[in-house]
Image: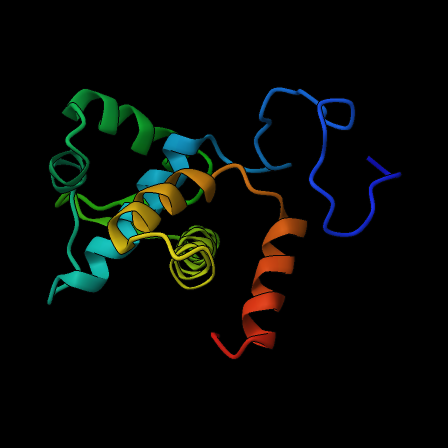
Length: 151
């Protein structure tokens, strides 16, 4: 792809097929989804209390699946689970959750404002893209939106 001219659409000869890898050092998509969901739910609720059952209901996932996923986040030191069942972020977990949600916000804005995608589609697609997009692409999109005055 090095021989592509700026703004030239890649041809089949230029395209590279490869499996979509996770970002280096990142969690699995499900772990990122749990962190982002906890953050969103805490911001929405007046008391900020979120339990595993709340996450399961929000995502429409089974309670055992959510419990297993949250257990993995706890093992990684990203959340703690109080005796009451309340989920709390560790400093590292909160930073990671905020980063995921920020990617979601930026991608949604980009899809809506630049690509003119309807808001509901932009939200859904951003939620999928946020888990696989590279840091380099995110930096480029964010810089573009800042330059355009959208951020």
